[in-house]
Amino acid sequence: MKPAPFTYHRPCTVDEAVQRLDELDGAGKVLAGGQSLVPLLSMRLAAPEHLVDINGLTELDSVEVAPGQVRVGATARQARVERDPAVRAAVPLLGQALAQVAHPTIRNRGTVVGSLVHADPASELPAVLLLLDGVVEVRTASGRREVAATDMFLGPMSSAVGAGELATAARFPVPAPHSGTSFVEVSRRHGDFALCGVAALVVTDPAGAITSARAALVGVAPTAVLVDLTPAVHGTGGGLDARSRDALVEAAIDPETDIHASADYRRQLARVLTARAVDEAALRATAAGGASR
Amino acid sequence: MTPDSPVHVSLRVNGSRHEVDVPARRLLSDLLRHDLGLTGTHVGCEHGVCGACTVLVDGAPMRSCLLFAVSVDGAEVTTMEGCRAADGSLGPVQAAFRDAHALQCGFCTPGFVTTVTAFLRENRAPTEAEAREAISGNLCRCTGYQNIVAAVLRAAEATAPDETAGERR
Figure (cartoon, each protein chain N blue to C red):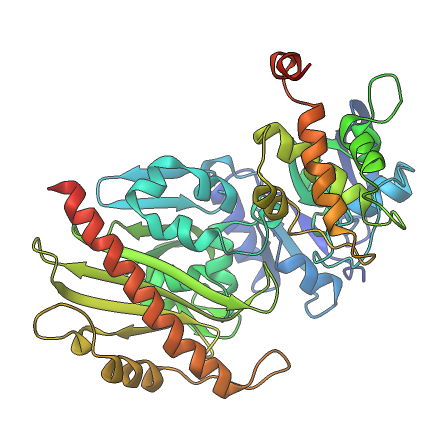
């Protein structure tokens, strides 16, 4: 249970970090919080030749709440984002999801951006990025680019951030007025990865009628999946038709059987948790509308 | 630089400054135990699940088995040994664990004590539910959780500000 030897790099600036990653030509792995990477190294499931430690890049240790968005730098810890009152007010879904990421002790070190790049199919934050149409900012030695949430997650533990690239920040748009969100999940033990988790976003008109609903599900496909549930909204906007909601969810997911749960059970969880998340998000949307009136 | 060339690490542990040269792959848990001889930090699962190796890094509880010593260069680390009272006797959390019979074999105890010490700094009067949430990342294979929760609440009383203690008397 000890990591294989590696050569350690501790750049002091983002420029230096991307330069080093470029020189290493795919052999360098970025170390941020390390709460997923270090176990993989200790179990020798991964043995990169070079680790590029970005914890010294103070320029990435930022949480900015601007009109319309929350921007989280690559070394900002999950616990800091979770507790930030301005973040909780602007994008409540971040706090709702982060509270279910592992344990508080892990969140003291783990980073939001690292979790996105790691792209575990059962982890919570990819669902948040997808549901809110977020963006990941990426730097390379030759320039910068942005990855839209829908292009970010390629497969289990596989994201669009390449070996020579450094994800520097993630942006989470503030949801529309009269909207509500929710994140619910079921896991075997408190703090474990979810068998299934669902993030929901419901938007209503000023009178409280639902105009759109969407959900992002984790643990039930090779990546987090986004489902538009708006076609299931009743004409009156009073709620969702249960049968069409379930059908939309089932068409989007592809759960597998493993030692933790059968595919059928995960399918059942996906239906039930989507219903719960949408209901809770709708209640919050109505409450938010009431508060703003 | 090769994978095995030592890297210089400078950190403060329980108030004492330490300068060591270790391989980059040295886990903080191993640095504490092997290089510094501070065997109060226990290593259970070594992949971040059990919580036995929890130490405070700049005041925040973290898994020392999930940190490379080199990546906490410059940090202030507090271990179980640092949770003692200034005169070397049991600290308030340790005393509460003894008083509430919150340890059986004692293997998990260092992780609990460090976690609870940090928790009580943020929440001086936790409810039982908050106490349970606070220790949710620590495993006790002797299944002594009831008494551990009791110890958290007892430690909270013992460390409460003086005016509260005064009211109670």
